Length: 68
Image 1 (cartoon, rainbow, N blue to C red):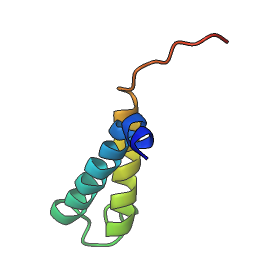
Image 2: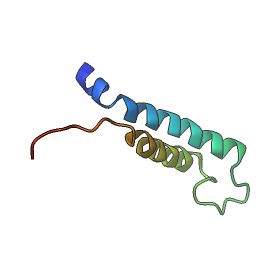
Image 3: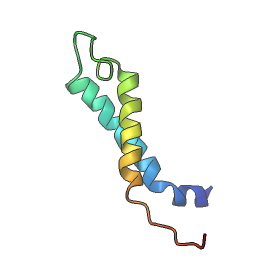
Image 4: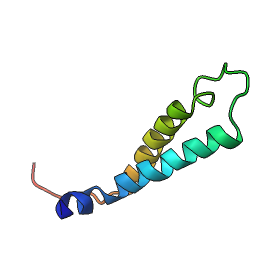
């Protein structure tokens, strides 16, 4: 378990921060009319933010050097 957390720490943090940011976007910006597919639903906003956070934080991983 420690190895898993150590290997995927940045990705997990990225998903958490992205999810929080997605909820904050829904809460503070949102879409009152309900026509905005992402910001009108809190669940979709959190999932979308989590995915974006994962992708953003995944860019900062160390490259593994190995033989192919």
